[in-house]
Image (cartoon, chains in turn orange, green):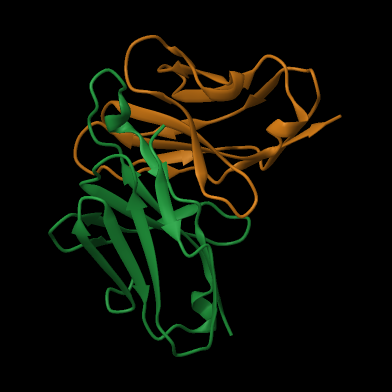
Length: 114
Length: 121
């Protein structure tokens, strides 16, 4: 079975400060890891993914994430937050074989204050 | 990135009616599409996996006769909520798994539609 944990329901950060949204995962096999962002009443937008290769992955809108195999984590980061980054962020995982559907974390609401 | 179009964006219907939601991959062929349901302030729950030309695979607890899925072509999957009731009110989101395109690495990414908010009165 595969699972994802996002331990924080909400993260608050001031504009211009760095942000981190945490994610840990559990899979049997090699993980494919993803971050998506959701704005109100909208579908999910793909931010970035880790399949293989460099542990630091760069994605859209200045976001990046670091894959840490020993800690089974894939935290989302951005050096300088913008008010427009305020949204709901989902971490997702699937394994490289078998079931292809993503398993999502519970989501973390990011609130960036001006 | 790849585009997935979902229609309609919002539906309000009376109890007992059926509602069809369409999901189209606009610029790529999607052999696999997924249907998710999202309750307020909750994560996405996978309902079913749809493969072109074959029957959908439903997750445990999802009623096959209630949520009919058809994936007739490589660019279109439909979800029909039959005899909808107020408890079916939710946000339904489809996604399509990217087809292989040389050099873009899109084949491992799921692209999502904008979602359909269903309200059953």
